[in-house]
Image (cartoon, rainbow, N blue to C red):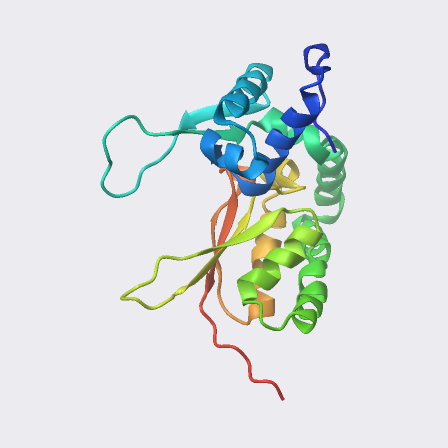
Length: 231
């Protein structure tokens, strides 16, 4: 779904601005250089579109965090979707969902909300095995990224920093969460996701950050697990 445009954005550049906003949604906070490379645009053109998106409140600019030794010069700026920017994609039913869950909690109790949250993420167990059956060479995190992406989360995988040269696992990154605003009030939705991930992997996983609580990306640590031998 394209973000809602004001009259000022109804021009020939609007489709490109949609692409800029969507690539930030799908890939997380990005620098202008990152966006120019992904979209095959000049850095100057990307900055012009970013300036417009910032002025509309769709995107915000902040200083990029630098880990380790900081080089000379000013840190690069990164651009992330604002809450309004996320709203404009596919969260128009949040108010109704929140009201429904409030009613469920008030009339049936908190356990009913937990059960609803678990049923909502039943797709994790349902689809995980199917994805691996089609592509058994995927790592657990890669398979989960496919499962979540198919269900509206725009997920990807990053390697965790190795320890003593040995891989310790991967990080499942969800750049978009279709229920993030609802989960802000009902964290049971996030907890059910984490529980479902751990269940299909048969191991403990750690949720490091969530969009629902103000982070730019939902991240979950997926520990290194040995591949199962084929029967």
